[in-house]
Length: 173
Ligand code: SAM
Image (cartoon, rainbow, N blue to C red; front, side, top):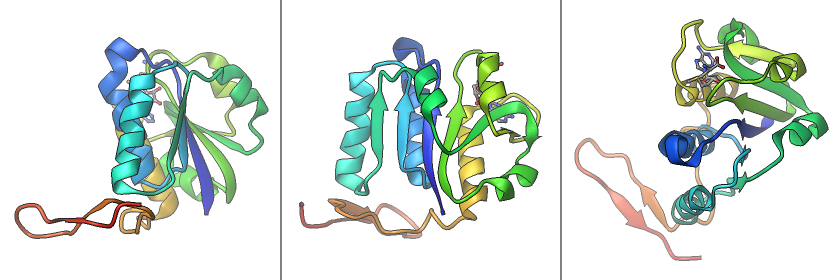
């Protein structure tokens, strides 16, 4: 299975707080291992780390990273989500095992990202959301396998039920 890192470009803490949080939570829930956010945002780090602490797993967040250098130094396959790319159905089977970097934007993404990417991938050719695009790409790559899995070290676990909420407290680590 690919080891996926998500790179979030252009995060503006005041404006994109909610959506970047959703990008990170979606990355975690759909099977990525870590997220790198170009802008420093301690509040964002804290809120994602709090989810990891309660719901488990080893998802990591780092903010304030020089994205140009990170992209330049990255050794694996770079996948850039853009509505101008090739259809996800065509691209997902071409995502290899090993280290994969999935790049999502917020504002306009610089042309060098399109050039550096091994795969520019479109989830439809209409503009929508980085959250939706990321969820669909990861789900296609992992073929749905990441949605039902155990998270090590969880303090709480949700048990599926037809109505209401069923949450169990596990022993604290
Ligand atoms: N206006 C920006 C531009 O031209 O680059 C894009 C803004 S869009 C709200 C933010 C991000 O969502 C994009 O950078 C891309 O990663 C993702 N995105 C939006 N629509 C997409 C689509 N149809 N397929 C893949 N990714 C998409």
